[in-house]
Length: 426
Image (tube, rainbow, N blue to C red):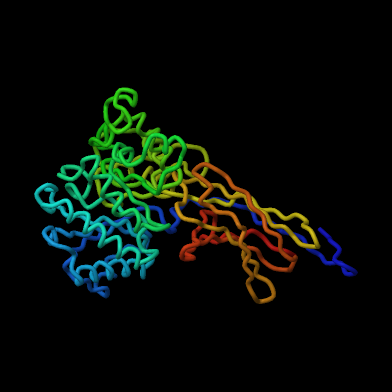
């Protein structure tokens, strides 16, 4: 392609690279498998020892914080400093935190909770104030301290009014980045009106499910009555709850644990996780169902034929961005427009603002150009196109993406190391 610039002709031919999706689980922020790391609020951590327990292939970490020692008093300065150190430790090692502070780790929620509800609110306030001082550490605040294992059941503090008070207490501290996850869709609906749901005007309140596939109702996550019979605040049938989750989790994270119980074919497993828009799953528990998935092989067309359900699920948790095409066209004032087509092949969207960035390597330097679009708007199964105009130069073109909050790199699932080679100007 030959263009004229003033009195001088300049050759500018775009030699496009063939775009290929690679069959891999991309190590990238805000998605994937996670492990659980348990701490006592009263105990100091030792980072040099703790760092050896981190899994390099996981970008998520569920921090389970036991605050039972303070069931009769406020968190003291030492405990708050310990919590701050824990959050900053995981941030240092680039782990996005699923944060679950709890009173109980033994299945004795009512017994181990504070005697006074006012102390629960005090603890939420203290933790919330701390979160404001440790920006970009917590991805999801999971639960509201109460219940057995912090899972918001078997608690003295789960009335509708108490749920609303806890939500009102913690929500001002969550800022722009942190999502709060409650245990069941019915609890979500207790906090959000039907009108707000229908108009899609609701805050960053999402769900976690620690009993995926354990039973028909996911161990009480769902109900047995229809929406019409149950009403807005009560549990609905599995089919109706999954449809409900599908809508609210389009732009927000959803995750938890898969448990053995139901026997399901590979296609049914994948379809339900896709419908839930699952972003993250426990990589260790339940071993029985995870081992089953490792033995189930897919029979399908394309690159996923012969891969295990476990590996397929791992590769599709959360977002999965694939560059499908790139092109060049003539722009105004002698400039060149570079366009890209990006598909989200994952189960879910990316839940924080993220921008694709063009890298131009020419004349022994690299220039960057932001596309000015937000990949957060590219929901699961959707495709987004974007272009940017630059001056034509001889050099190589690459595509990367970065979270706007902390500039962490978001990897693409094309051939390569997460940064995609688009082609070259020659």
